Image (cartoon, rainbow, N blue to C red; front, side):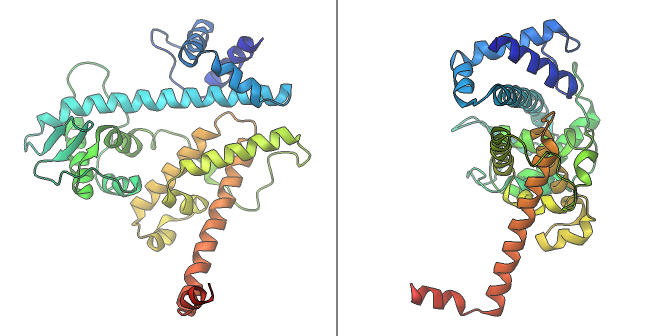
Length: 319
C-alpha cells in the first residue's frame, strides 16, 4: 500500500512539474517513475516509510506527507543535477582563463579563489555574492551537453566568477560558487514566476478555513520550512516582490538589477517549495505575511531607536 502511494505521488508531482526525469529516459513514463521510486527506497531505506507513517494522523495527512516528501526529493535532485553540472564545468573552464586569475584549493575542502587573495573561506550572506554576479552582463540559460565549452560561455563564466570572488575577498567553496552562478544565470530567467508575482495582502485565502487540523498543521510546518530556506535579505523583501524594484531597493542598499535578482530568487525558492502543493497559494501568502510582519517590526525598532536613543540604556538600567 505505502509503495503504491509513493508511486502515485511520484507520478503526480513529476508529471505536473518541471523536474528532470531519471537518466536513460526521455520523459516521465511509468518506467521512469518506477526507476525513481526504486532509487528513493534504496537510498533512504526502511526508515523512510516508518518516519512518514509515524507523522501521519489520518489517511489524508499520510497522502500529503508522501506528496511533500516526494516533491522535496525531486527538488533536491534537480538542484543537485544543475549545480553539479556547473560545478564540474567550472573545474574545466576556469583554468583556461587567459589571465590565469583563478586558483583551485582542495583543502580543507574544494574551493576557488583569485590568485593572491586571502586564504580565509567566505562565511557571509550568499545574497552579497549574488549581487556581485548580478552586475555581470551576459546570458547562460543552459550549458552544452557535450564537447568543448563555447568561448562565449567561457567568457561569461570567467567574468562572473571573477566578480564573485573579488567581492568575497576570500576563497569560496566550489559548491557555493556553482550555486550562485546557477541562481544568477540558469534558474531565474527561464522559470515562470507569474503565479507568485501578483500576490497581495488582500488576496482571498486559497484554503477553506474549516480545513482539517492535520492539513493546517502540515501547512504551518511547510511555511516554517520555506521561511528558514530564505536568506535574511530574502525574508525582508519577499513581500515586495512584484513592486517596482527601484522604489524599494535603495532601503536595502540594492540597485535596481540587484533588487530584481534578490526578489526573483526569493520567488523562485518559494515557487519550488510549494510546487504542486494543493495548499501552495496559501503557503506563499503566509510566507508573504511573515515577510511583511518582519519588515514592519524592523522599521518600528529603527524608528524607536532614532526617536528615543536613551531607551536602550534605560532598559539596561531597569534590568
